[in-house]
Length: 488
Length: 96
Image (tube, rainbow over all chains, first blue to last red; front, side, top):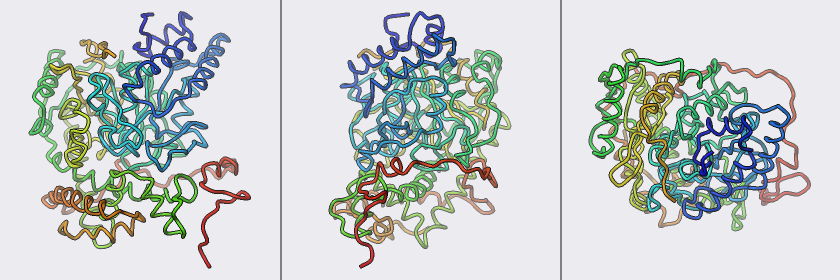
């Protein structure tokens, strides 16, 4: 193996582990040392438990020695966004209100990772309760973009993206409500995938907006994304919105499904506000697909311009309801000043939540309040149906749609922090996918002149992740962006 | 759709059980005014005859098998409670 084993993909490390050229303890130790060396600058982790990770690695090595290795993730350190429960480990959502919370049980995705033999590694920073696009809303720290430490890694799963891009994990999990996996993946130069709503169980994920939230992987390659998705996908009786569907062998599909594909390009995703360098990189990716024999067709998604407004009604309404559970009674921060029941609620929440969470709770409470429900929430749900119909109409003609993931490369820390609306608009190309419940993936498609990564978003059809991954793989096979790493 | 100026921050904060400082109230009123103006553009959309969509892939009548299984042990369930005594969560007096 190369000296920088922490930059190797899961697929290569799995081969090395299987060939006994490498042990999980060696690999895990390398990741721990890398984290100790760079995380004072990258700031991706809220916490980590090296002893626990090494114990999991030893158990993996023991399984392998006994001939009971479980598959490609056995012994691989996988980082988890700090909204995904791991029994016995902290679970903070990067919020003061959960600063001392310890998970009493495992999320379903955590159990699936553990069953696959993965080493669950660290608690990764995010915007508080996954509300934001930069990690600047974290109550604890702002993570850095490993490619330019004065810039944000994106969000909300910024810690998951930054840790992977910096070699502090071999793969990570994030959650995506309006772009929170794809946008940081684009900004950090890695692969990030949001599965179809319902493909991956949300049990044990701290809820933000339940009709939009999905857990998904960050990886170095599309093949690794296939490995991770195959591990975490599947129906779960503990999540009543999880979907009963056959889970194909996504990794095998990369080799079996060759296209040529019919790919859509929507003019609504190339308008005002799109950085010219991002536009040029995405255009070159579209040209590449055409050279590979794919048919490129123009499609129209006319309700795209309403996606951000629709999202900020639906997501805030759901969050105001979901976050009502943080009442200072059963768990989480309780105000020392409270003297009666109502005070416990309102003071504990005032002391525990940060500004963006409060802003969204207030907005969500307002749009659901008596007299406004029809004007805001009901109308937004109808526009949501139209946004989804746009995509379904487009899919009569094409297999998938190509867009930029983010209108700009990584922005500077502080640049948008004081203007919530401008921050919201950084999710303009990713939000429609959540509203429509579709799968989407962001893959590296170049760099700007100042060496900031650019992401290509590919939006797929419901529950057709195998095709989506194969389309992404087609691009990756012809390019080397994913083999470049930041200097830290 | 109503005008953004309708946002009565005190009323909404009470509904949300969220104590806001005077500074927060001023800042949020101003910022939410801007966000609500942006949201106003949804008024342009013709939604006549459109069914509202709560979930992208509706799943109906999800039944679980009625099989008893262990829940969280009491110690674990209470581990994160801010205050506890005798296997119960302690709260201030609710009824005099």
